Amino acid sequence: MNLHLLAGVAVLLILVAASAYREALRNEPIRRYRMNPGKLPPVDDNE
Image 1 (cartoon, helix red, strand yellow):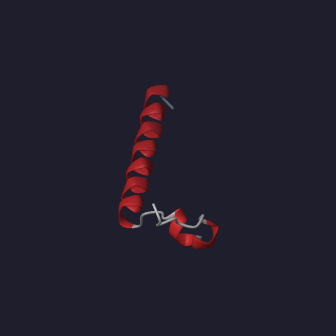
Image 2: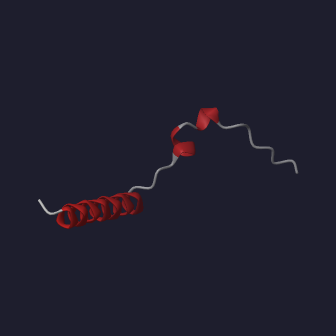
């Protein structure tokens, strides 16, 4: 197989994966701090 063709297919797959990842993040944002509220330090509102 031609090396240029193989490199082109690899770059195309990387771009498709990056696009799918960005779309997934846009539709379902990751909220680490919301998932584990018990691990957060207490909020001081007296300031």
